Length: 285
Image 1: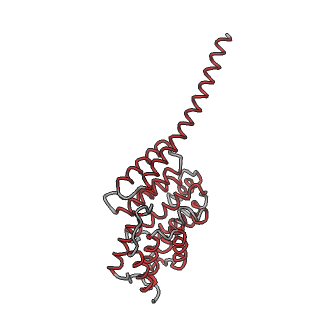
Image 2 (image 1 turned 60 degrees about the vertical axis):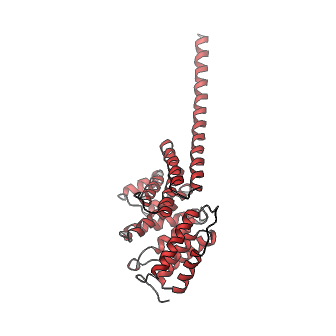
Image 3 (image 1 turned 60 degrees about the horizontal axis):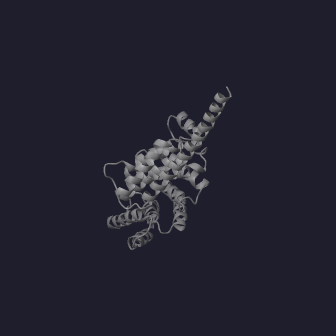
């Protein structure tokens, strides 16, 4: 009898040890997925690196579906792909937005409030999110804004309150995340609306200026400021100065944002070639 008891005790001990090893293994797997995905993302300069990073993050979502960081990373990678590489049959901004929303729905309170509002992302729902969701909030807001802009802000009157709420909450919780990125997201969200929807250009300018001060090497912030704020204000001289400054920049070989900076230069050249967009002038120069 004592031998049977001893055998059972040993089995329980081994089982407990096995569980500990399994937990440790899962933790190691999580770190490996993030490390490998991030290394590829940081090396992004063409579709190959980004697509491989996305595959790593997708495997992480399958293994750790309740881990916000994995879905936040996917939202970030899909935004980078859509912005830096343009349309190639993949609706990157929409995909980035969906992963970002899935990320935030991991928070049961947020998910419940969104469900109760018929699927709408309300300011009340956004207010319950904590700092662990800043990555998801920021990239979702950016993806959503760029998605709206590509479509001529169709439906913006419905979507923009959610886009602005996400960016504001990210600024409130962690304004220094990723070199002031929440401020850039907020500037874009505030300025995106056309004249009939009353964009908040003064607030948008301040937000962009905060982002530019935090990360002056990121050229997209300057192009967004010129396109969505300065042009709408009709400030021709400032508009030209901002865009020419971007065009004259030579991207550094080891610049981690070289993909986005190259795209910003292309945007600046195109805007200068087209001339100041006067469709939504709100004030005289």
